[in-house]
Image (tube, rainbow, N blue to C red; front, side, top):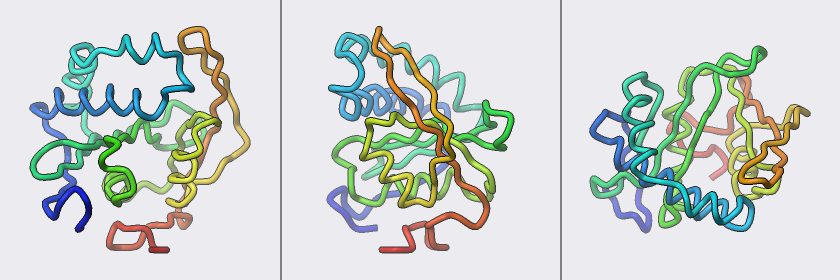
Length: 179
């Protein structure tokens, strides 16, 4: 994949040593994606150290994939069992640094994380059009479920999206089939 990230872009399962880099991406991507949506105090209070501890626990469980550009983690995806009783899997997180926007890395991460999964759900902020477009282009669709998440005193509406067998927009190469 050639992009502004360079030619050396890879996607692979995360290993425990990736935890600090995944944590950095997680914290920075939240700040980039949610500024103006999530209260600044919440975003500014996010800690790479606390996030690293969480990823040190979660990465060994599996289901975490990292995207690397020139051997540096610039994105990740995390999939696991669904917290909802009517879906088998859940895409818990997918984030890339702003420098990796529009490069195809998000699709490559989602393709790797969701390979072989036939029923996947996720929750996305209703007021996050960039993420919603990404999921829709990938083949996810809203299923009518809505919930309100309170973060730092702000009430944020979330929509549930689903991807079921046969609805993916991803080709066998792992890149969007429409590109």
